[in-house]
Image 1 (tube, rainbow, N blue to C red):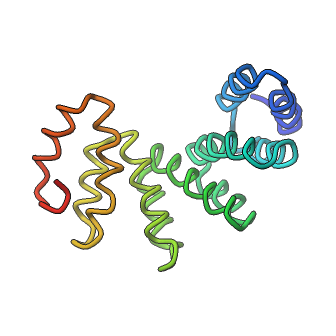
Image 2 (tube, one colour):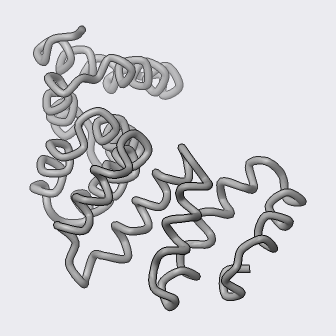
Length: 181
């Protein structure tokens, strides 16, 4: 395990690498070492080391990975950043959490979403579910209100397309809601 202090310096070194491919590869390797104890340090290192488009390259990966191992604390830290960065990071975090612990992520969403962000965060939840268990994601979407289902079919199809277009088309025909076909 990497201590928070060592995680900070390792993340900073990876992000400062002048070779973008090597930087990304090293950053991805460090995400494998992420723990609930060093997640906040990794987040702080990213925020202090990169900005702009570079932050948008690294932050979603960190948010997803941190969400998968410590969803509630990661969401709290990322939402506290506020603004656009906080919103997009929260979505990636929730997707990561939903991929690892769907029930806890669903419970959190039910308790913490507002009318203005419910659709955005629900999309993140469906994304995380679909990446891990397409059948569970489909079941979840089919359980939503009639007028909400169709807005998430693209998330489900995105996962099915990974198996090829013909399979995705056949799968879509099996959906019982004609608005989703």
